[in-house]
Image (cartoon, rainbow, N blue to C red; front, side):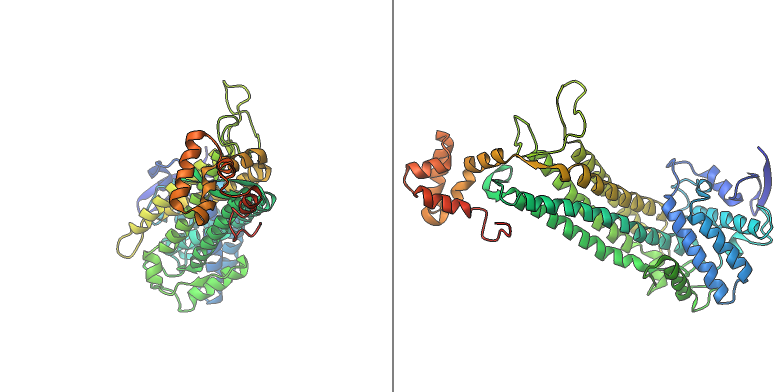
Length: 463
């Protein structure tokens, strides 16, 4: 393999001739090999978007020649388009601020821009990775700003799939609005409910989860880019930060704004932890819904079996005809992974010292991974599970009639103690509550049926 020689303060190294990265990247590739994977490419692309905005801002403020700025901006466009994704291979577990990846991007952009201006890779006479590409920047504010930028952009896809799941649940809420069934608390018989009410609760939970994420996402619009080193903006003009943000918003059609306190935004990544926590709560809600669907579909002959989940694949390698709730199980695992990632993010966001958080790569990787997992999980659950759910109405109604929870409707008539005795007799005699009520002439059949009709509550919007 042909090589070129590059030199830095630590000495010389052979770099593959075709590589757009340089000596700093080569050292990092040799030094770090723990995670076995690089930073998510979405963060790399977000860094390129920020560096494009920085180059344009530097040119507008008269600190960078327009020819150099335009070349850097054009190089950024090519990186954002994915043309050089194979040049960003530094391991995730690297220098805590992400310096290795920031320099990786600086070198790649410098070499792309240099070639565009007639130079050669590795020759920094025309475009220097530090002096030009990184002008007015520090890893310490570029990387956390890129995490925020990447998360905000990915959130759009998350919400699209979350809305799809919400729509599927609402459709089932309407479809099952009159399917009477037994409610269950503590996994024991409880007062009646409709299947539609259960799905209505699921849809409302997802609606609230989305609202929490949306609120947390809004805090990510505050960017510390341009703060340099510790957030004070050393070696930059007062207008630099606002100019960067103006350029970024123009290109991304977003509403980012400069950090109120650049020093705080360099030290604290709590906004990211807040967003991650909101996603954890969504994961918890989906986990609960998926487990409910598994329980309600359990059987088919020895379980609850009040609903049918779509049969997507054979469920066993040894038991013919067995169908498992595989989509729900896959969703469970994805949600558990997200909840674990949030724990990592929370610890890492709290683990900074003095003027810097030194755990940014692991924070960014887990955040981006979680957004992707939840996006795909919501789509899968909506399209391959919820949309195809059907109700076993006969089973639901049979359980409704058999539930000891039905006795609760007699509380206003007989009182708690007499009703408790009725439940005990029902369990001992194996006679349904309804049968005992008629046999004991506690109510006539018409009055009982009228009472049962309203047994799912006056607040039921679907009754």
